[in-house]
Length: 266
Image (cartoon, rainbow, N blue to C red; front, side, top):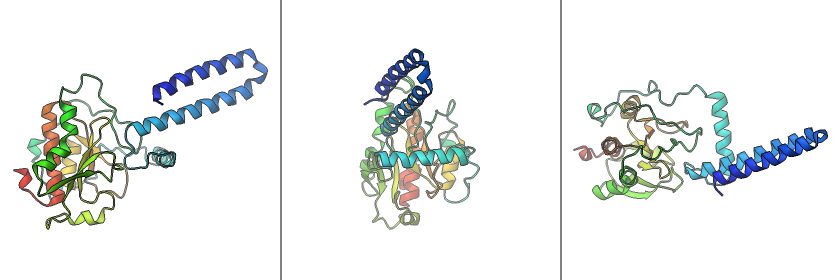
């Protein structure tokens, strides 16, 4: 059942109950309670299906997973409302860097609107016509393209961090140069990046210094959950082929960081 179908049904039920209140004012309190319960239940069902439609960010796409993410969402609203994920000041500029800052220009226009959830971390899809033809397809194929281009370094696997709902680029665990931090990451492991099919954004694992450059330049924002590397960030969906080129440079920096192989930067 789609969100629009639920919302249409909700509107009909609301008007029916409102007419009942007008017809039987003596039962207004009881009927008002029924109206609230109906509206709340319908909203929860609609919100659940919307949550699933964006991909669940590695959480099981079940009611149990939904409630867990909803509690997290509410707790962040109460305790962490001031946490601006576009603020890069908490990221260090020291340490390894694989991005040529001159090749990462300031992103044109305002940052995209982000959906009001902690997980999954997604942007609101662009309106029709905002992204140029072919951009979405090229972005969706980035993982497969990189894996095919560097078969000695990378492999294509379903992303564990994304709940196996998207293709991820992984550095091969057999590499002698693999980043030692990978062993400490239960869910990310040797993953470099994955794209989100619903709206074209990505998650990419960069060095902290490179993550700072990307966030400061307006191309992405920090990840909201503690316990993940500071360099694991969201990169906004590109709108033009030139922007896809920038996203590719960002992903290449991620490949170098995770794999330890810098020849991909050439």
